[in-house]
Image (cartoon, rainbow, N blue to C red; front, side, top):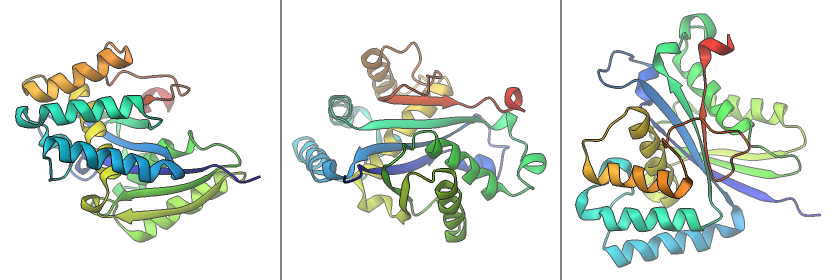
Length: 236
């Protein structure tokens, strides 16, 4: 029997807090990914391109680009995501609970990829193939990606981790979609509300998903929009 093949497109928000935790106004790091069946990729890409043409949006799909002039496009993108079989999962990390010295050998990249492992591992199913794609600009050393690949393979012996590959986000609408959804969760977690268009997107997602707060913790079994607020101090 042919194994199901899942592709995962990942991006991060506030990842610089692993390296410099003094940035004012920022507390939460978000790492997230969009899960999809490999066979669905052409159709999903065509749907996003159609929305781009309809709304005359030619630049990158990014949370920081959400603005009143593009609000209709981003609302349509949310609708498309919610009506599709795409799934989203993210891990939310409180920088105040990070102890890179004690638990990650003072190695920021090691800590960063340990959380990437937590994001991916708990949604990997037996007898399923996976291809993982991460943003080229923020994925760090290729050696670390190889370590992440090896650890995921060893922890999921009945699954098939085909590859973990870096891609330029400018060339991938699906990594851009991950950026957009990760940014929305981060915006919610920081209690932001000053940007009208961004607040409208967060409220739309909350209403459609039935959430009191978009960044609230969900059960691991939540399949559409899964948020893992890891509690590091409690788990130690």
